[in-house]
Figure 1 (cartoon, helix red, strand yellow):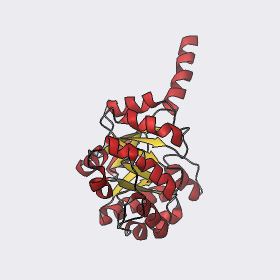
Figure 2: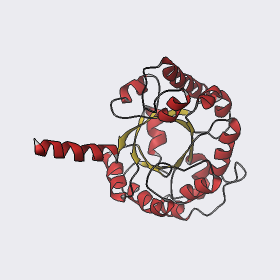
Figure 3: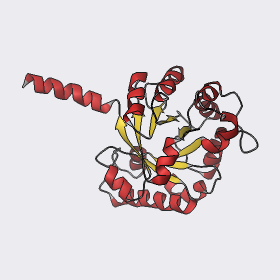
Figure 4: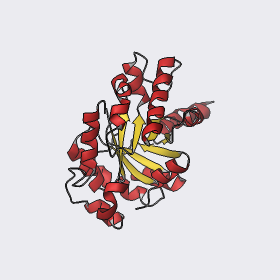
Length: 248
């Protein structure tokens, strides 16, 4: 299975796009634009499981790795996303080694895990799926609380975690800060550094939710999976900007 996210992260930095909206054409455009991965957000986006198959088919028309953020660390949700054809799942709010192990088990077929077999979307799209699934599917756990940062070494000691993904807004909230993708508070930057250093020790890819302006700073501290493209906020901003310009 072609996995552009893993390849790009191992060679340098994987840059990704994030899909909140129900329109598959946007997922197709992102994949064809050259992003290394396109993530469909089932947690906070407007996309539901009923929309997911169309989004993953659209991503397959380009070169990006198809990734899904599931709504929660529930095995059935992870299984549904993978069966539909995602080659990676981002799992929210993983704060302990036990929660990390639960996510990994849901991503792997026996004997490595507890995933149930029946990947009808995945095997249609990815040749030799069964043989490669346990090694090629990426289990990406979200580190988005002060507790998760404190437990990072125990979390990353769980076999089978391929990457972590920092949710900066939720991490900010647990530090008593406003929910933003960047902060001036040193504790926030210390937390990022702690996670990246742990990833380097454990051979795990460090990822982060960001934006184009933040990408150089995140790359500099060692992140190798950085989300920079979005379908929602730029469109909303463009509507307002175009109207303002037209009104003079």
